Image (tube, rainbow, N blue to C red; front, side, top):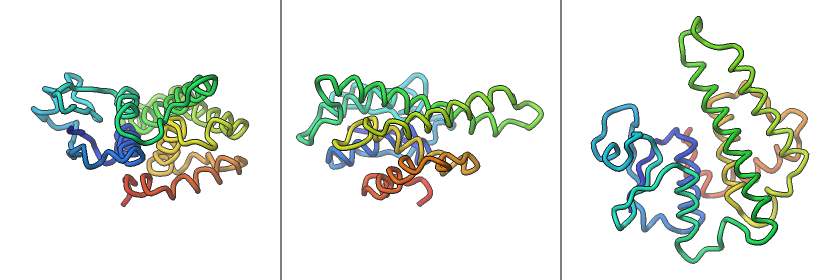
Length: 199
């Protein structure tokens, strides 16, 4: 298989973490790609010209990150990253919350790159509020992020890692000791270290 990714993309990082946690790196060629430059192979696989994009051994393209992670969770012999039973919906809802946090972070980063006179104060405040509310929600209920490794944990780790990387001014650790301690431990996982965009 082939994975088109950008080193600084938090969405690609999620997929690359899953690859490592499921022991699939020997089955996937990771192709460093700049989605902002024309790339015929990426454009052929994904008309949106976005990363991450996975091309399977059957030459089927799969995107976006949540879909790729779900697909990879069906491959290999490692324990699944999506629980079964009642815990499944808890994990999937937590995953959606953390993916939304990541979307808000990404949107905020892109907005801050616009000329200052063109930036929307309203949207920046809205996205930052969503980020901090999500951090509060995780702090108040760490259950979905404990015990068995799930896609929810990976999504939260990717989001908080991206916050540290691109928006260090957002003090998500302040008054959130459980979330801070969780991330400190999670960030030490080999899959997180290997995909750290700052290294």
